[in-house]
Length: 494
Image: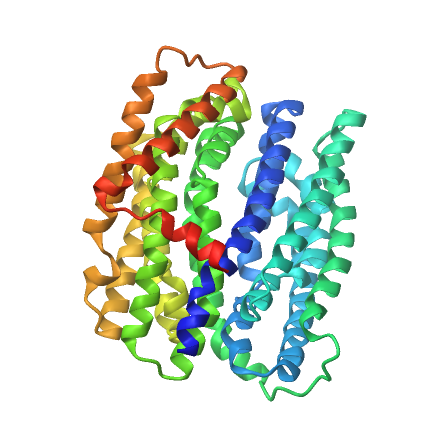
């Protein structure tokens, strides 16, 4: 009975994480929209390459440590949890220092690999940032464990506002280069580090630290396979970006970077669900709960995620071109095709498989799985770029890899838990949700086709089309036996 009550609050906890992600995305997309207009394509491409290198290597140097919070904290009391949090934070600080030294020392090598001499300068100026930001990692896992994700929303919104102000304003006011943006990023990172220290201590105020007994050996036994899977995952994500950057230049890379993103709203929801579920699954498995209870939670979460994500994905597939132009201007219209291809992944990423695999302690399988797909990404990616000589082919292959990764993971979970595969992946139910959304958007597309012209002023018509689309979905949902009201009830009841 207690477990059931806790599960019901997952929607509320995930809601705050979605709000947190939405504020972060909104501010980052504003930043991208502004900088892509103030920088020419060459300079913007360099800036995005710096972010690409940072985000790629961050996966390696974080060593899977942020996941430790969600896995171990549900199994300790607050006093021991406090010890665990600061032990992991000190480790993140150490690896952050190594990361910064690596960027500074290897800037020339990185510039040579990506064939952009300007990166040598940019990476040196950027190098202090990992030291400042890596100790801030893990806040989501901490507050998700203690069911206080509202603090994640506050922290992320506050820090992203600071980052936006310090990165964008120097560029606008002083007509500066991408280096001005990096200067602002360093200043905002210092403030973020201070705020992270305050927030990480929030759940433990008035609590006397008690040694957890968790050894570094225990930590690395769990995190090292995650490190390997992170490296292989990074290799999967980096393959298409590397081939496009090296074979097609910075201009195409800029178009690809702005387009080949999964629907941000969908990512917010799946990330929130994963962060919320990992400590819950970890607790259920730790107390040896019945698989029936786990499946009930899984299906309930998947159903709620799909009825939110699928309609949004289908809307933006049909209005991809207009969305890209409104966000990035007409010069990034070629990004549309990458946007459509990438959004197809969201039909499968709605399935949050990672929390259950990690909660079961199957980090070695998780690493081996990513190794196999990483090897495939680089070998087959090279074959594709050699045969077709088009970045679109690379994008299609990358999307197919992501989809197969999800389906393979579900097969493993099914075998491990003796749960029927199509109970984990209810394809009929998901297809009905998708069909309902497609019928509604076709009606809207026809209705608005005579009015919509691709200009910056069309943002109002896009909004009107989206509102009309939602109204039609809600009105016709009973005919498809889709219950949208379940989401509102879960939130309002809380």
